[in-house]
View 1 (cartoon, rainbow over the protein chains, first blue to last red):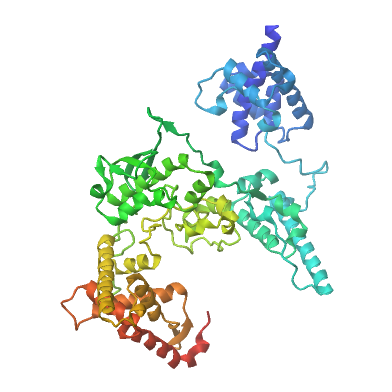
View 2 (cartoon, each protein chain N blue to C red):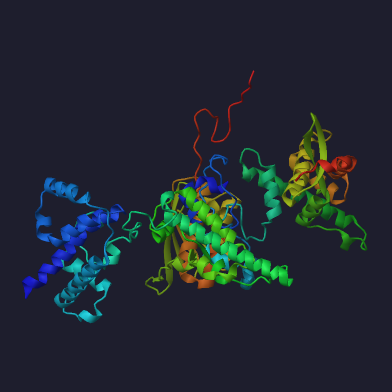
Length: 395
Length: 232
């Protein structure tokens, strides 16, 4: 039982590992080479590097054919088989064995310490391993199907043509409405559009299976925005929304640490903060009186500047909890402004665990939960300071 | 400006309708750490009392860090903070702030003295709040129109133009500071004391600073014939 089970598994896992690493890196890939290897997996595994190179040279000249449907089907069958074998090995039901279970099983059965994750054994559905490739672009007579073939980027330009067609349609519709006497249509709310952004370059590239440069992407976005600004843009939502990505609320991504309790059952929370070159470690204690100690000193004697003290108290003041907490801060490096800012960030972060979601979101919108990444700008050679120039006269 | 620093790929990733058109080589390259998607922080407790008025998109975008001059303290007034920044020299904000506060103290002392000396029926009309006096004084100095120089045929014309709110505020505050610094007939006094007297004068719609506002209005009026040079 063990031998036939191990066969497909290792071949699947290893094969995918071998080819995925080469295929995922260069998007074009060489399908032919891959197919040959699939047919002779055992030779492939034991082959020397020199022989392998020879073989690639011999096969790559045949043609750059995309993966055929039959080939992908074959791979899918092999994948399903491997998945079921894994389920059996793990003693689970093969019918409900998901991809997550597959990953877990492989990391359990074939633990690997290889640094490159692509080099580790894996078993994935073929559509994840083999990148989508362009279909054959010319017929048997050698003539290209698309009239845009000789632009070199047929899919990109046909996408732009499609966009232009949509725009023409919208314009025609607008003309019709104008003829009916409608000058300005009633603006319709379009929340899906407002809550989304254009998909990025890589996503478009994946969609059209062609590479494009930044300039071409910008042209594309300009075109799409032109369409989106059209008063009747909502007439063709499918076309526009295909290239939009939904925005996710940032606050949803923030993770709040659970509260900790000391020996007396009093809740407390710890957090780090930084600003400029200063670092701070802050402990926020519930059921306090609003006392703030910094490096063992009361706040008023540690920070002599009023603005710095205001900054330290800002988060507690913002949520109206000035007298609920005791703050203990350790702060090192940096100057007074930086230290005050570091403590402010530390308090804000620790405070999150005591607050409701709305309050946390308000604090985020007030910019209290963002680490201030600004640093001193460097001095430049040939200039007096970062921006200031030497005085200079032509003659 | 923010566009240029993030490199091409970042721009393309977050391109929005409101973004200005970007052209390579036309922008100066500067180090701005915040990406253009970052929005300005709102440090104002009143703003959060009405959650339904907050733009929904605000929740989807990251926020810049609040500045160290911003605060929700009851002693914090954005206009005063702005004025302090204009008073500031070489980045010494603590000194600038102490000077402005000292000036407010002088104003307060002056008004309280006036209050006690005044007869009973006039007392309710004497304002003893220096911040309110400051706001009124600045408002009294704020110009309505300005001029902009335009070169035409080798000649420079002063063309009357409307001003933005920021520019108007800047002119008013800067005149106030400049007049205080240039005050020669009261030489041995501190800046704070001179500022206090200027504020009190402007509060009464008198003094040099208010005169400067009228001068600018007159200049704009005298040059209204050049209004057709305004191309913006």
